[in-house]
Length: 90
Image (cartoon, rainbow, N blue to C red; front, side, top):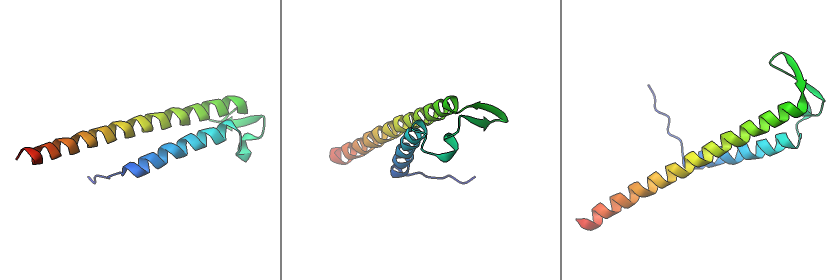
């Protein structure tokens, strides 16, 4: 099994792109959001309902990624401080 390593910069980029995409959904910038109804899951549904669901999903996902990035940075900072304390004590 191969381990994939991700950088903090890529997580931050994905988070900001998620927020931007959520805003673009909310403003109905994309051409498929211009009509009054859209086909989702084989059923016709109002575009306003689809836009609200899509933008909310992207905002929630981006917020979770931002929280994960914050925790990742804090853990990394604590590890670095712990490593530096060991060097100073010896």
